[in-house]
Amino acid sequence: MPEGDVVHRAAGRLGRALDGRVLTRSDFRVPRYATADLTGRTVLETAARGKHLLTRVEGGLTVHTHLRMDGEWLVSPAGRRTPPGDRVRLVLANAGWQAVGVRLGMVDLLRTETEHRVVGHLGPDLLGPGWDPQEAVRRLAEQPGRSIGEALLDQRNLAGIGTIYRAETLFLAGVSPWRPVGALDDVPGIVEIAQRLMDANRDRTDRVTTGDLRPGRGMWVYGRAGRACLRCGNRISRAELGAQPQERLVYWCRRCQPD
Image (cartoon, rainbow, N blue to C red):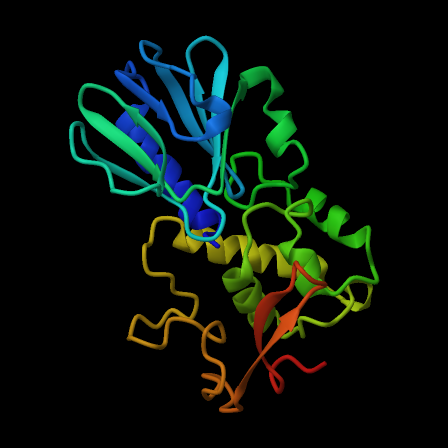
């Protein structure tokens, strides 16, 4: 699933193409909004909120989209052919540019004043202008018996983090994903690491958490199951963490992150 850094970059691309311009095409290819038409309205701004995208349009309307597992926004000069088949869920275009939403997991059209219906449950956004680490720590601490690996992925605690940054954050903190939140000595430190990693990669298409730009050495543990830990040489482990159907892959080094 695309994480907060990917979504913030998508918001930037959409904003540069759409913000401040009048829509000449509005094509919702979801049954619920098949008759909706935003043509003639100006796009006011595009914002990211965790893993959610909010495109605010003149007249008090907001287009809410979520990429889920494999969705993406394709931005190109206006008039380009859209991808074939039923992959396209939404097209927004102006005289110069078009944005095509492909395989979007969620598409909503709602009043801007009611955006809380789709993003009000989210915790502080790790890459947002209102990032509040103290509030993120407070929310994590509300369930002391929950594993830190599960708690970090809960978007109600802090918004934007996914399996990649969870794995890298906990490695750098030296914490096992299975440790209960209440048993940790430095939850604020974990939150700080997560924010620093995501912020460092917010403008990068190739994520790097080790500082090593060489191929295969950009990540400490994520995607490296069975390979040697870059720090201690121990074999990297992989498992599923979380109750079904919310279980997600987790990577960790048993030596650097003891249970």
